[in-house]
Length: 195
Image 1 (cartoon, one colour):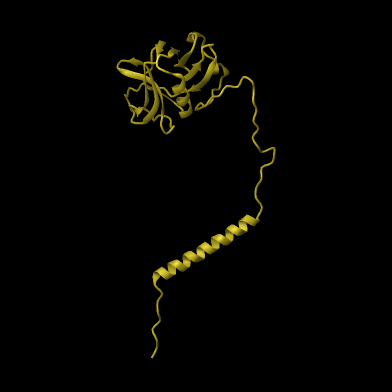
Image 2 (tube, rainbow, N blue to C red):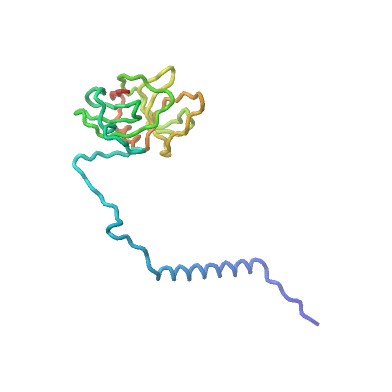
């Protein structure tokens, strides 16, 4: 009388196949470790250069014109924050009129009026009118009931396009720039908005 063949359970097949796959991966890894490895030559390595007048900047995009990095002549004097509507650029200016930092920003749909202001209120973190979690919120103006403030997204992203007809007064910046502005722009700090 013939003996019926015994079937292996499916878990045994899966275990066997998994063990075999792991053995193949280990063997290939060992073989790859013995092979040649790419190396960078001295010509391929980035070179660092330092100049005496270099100023730190962490802007979303570097400016194409050197004039953009200069503090605008019409921006007043003394320690202040300068915001250029036309250049979408901010300067943090020390008491001796030296720009400590400059960077580009993403403006909201409502611009502040050209003029002089002071930082009136600061908030560590809130949700922006566009629903994005923001931090380092530095208020300095209001236009037609819309608060105007500098801030950065908590996740460091650029702001999404505003919905049609939306009125937003947030002037957003990169996260590192928001941190620098927060440290610089205490309540009462002068803000000068220029064209």
